[in-house]
Image (cartoon, rainbow, N blue to C red; front, top):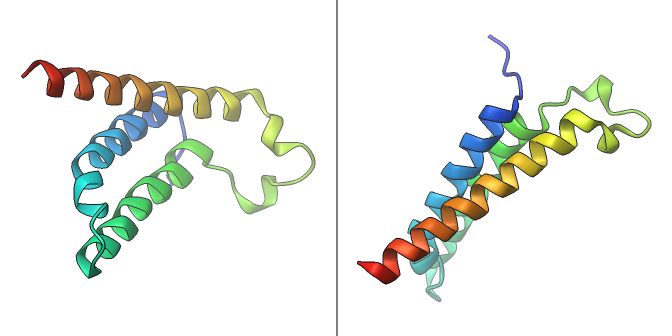
Length: 97
């Protein structure tokens, strides 16, 4: 089974990263071992899915101007937009309720 990157998977990855960020940020802000472990988990839970579902580029495809491919730029924009929208909705819900 191969993992392929798409716009919908990038958007779902952004939603997941935003939800995990909102949930783990208060714990990761602590200045002890638990905070450091939660910070590492937060970074790993954002970076690993983003690598597979947003970038999704094989090693042999990383030649030339691979960062300027329109499909990659669209996936990155989808990932960031969905993460920002989810964070906005979560903060709005937190303020209202």
